[in-house]
Image (cartoon, rainbow, N blue to C red; front, side, top):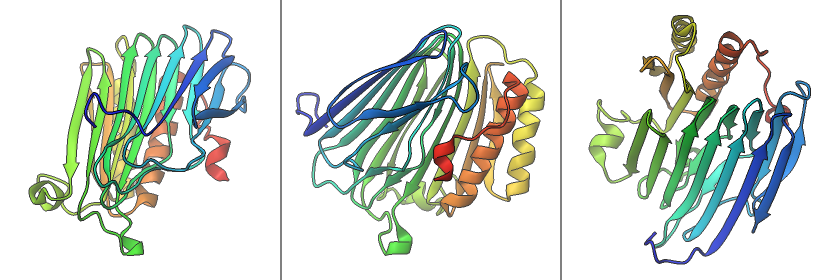
Length: 271
């Protein structure tokens, strides 16, 4: 979307988690905090974010700003997938910006890129604390006769000073979509990362846990440790379910091994 193009249906949500893990929210437009839960006790807050229209079309822009203070532990998730629908011209944008001095788990449910979409999906983090984040992208709806045969998605993941992953996925790019050095025909891409401002203690055990789960899943992917501060798991799959199961299993093990926190899944995932 050109810089001077007005957003068709803009929405903004600001979340602030304080040291006692109380969550303050302010919103503009159709994007809001549905509820805050404390299923693990008062020291960990689960924030459920909803976008009532149910999806984004060309010209829509969702902005989520997250501020996690020192001593706070905030888990942010969604009750349903983020959907980028077909667009004739303008881009649809989801822009997540987080400042993390405490501990943030950014765990939205999957992103669905519909045939013909023009989408920009970006997460930018300023990290002085700890971050556990996941992203699952599914291209098209082939089971409904809607393959991702035209359209484009920008996936942008940035941790300031540590990691930048920026890729345009364009349906017409045959080498990327079908090539052995690209997606090799896979329609689901998954990313899970664990990062912190200082060195990760027990990083070899964390890396081994991810590789064991990946091998058991039978999916194509890899896990690596970068700069001693960033653990990264990437996976390709034909369907969402096995990729989702893998990322959730590794997330649980990383949470327990790195933070000493139980492998607890948000309640909203089971509804």
